[in-house]
Image 1 (cartoon, one colour):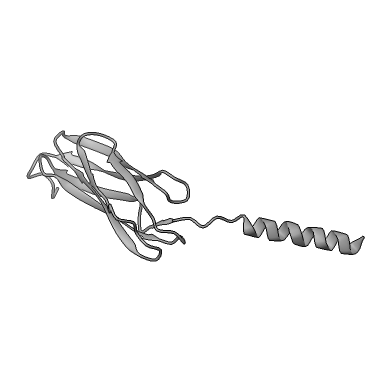
Image 2 (image 1 turned 45 degrees about the vertical axis):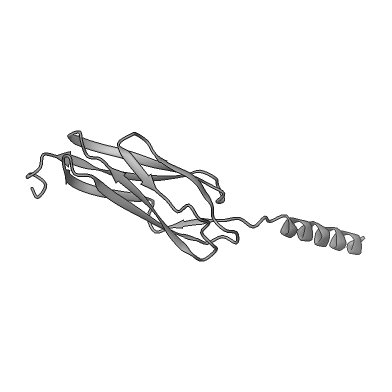
Length: 130
């Protein structure tokens, strides 16, 4: 009976280990960015650096801003395991006041969709240093 239990536990452990599926994995340097105070009508860019810590190439299918005031650039080619990449979000600071924006990144990475965030305050030009 002891042998049967030992053998059953061994088979169960082997099956569980075999079921782990290799995946791509984002490792963000930082998923948030604070611009602080920025001048009105001067676009600003946040760079979100990452490394693929997974076992498969990381393919970004799409990256888009939460509004039309944000343009996003992202790697179109697969990012191989251990390699790094950058997603750039350019915000057109047209309206005065505080802002909180996001970038949605769709990829084959573990967890699927990732969110990046940036914030700040748009002020009239000349009042940034205050």
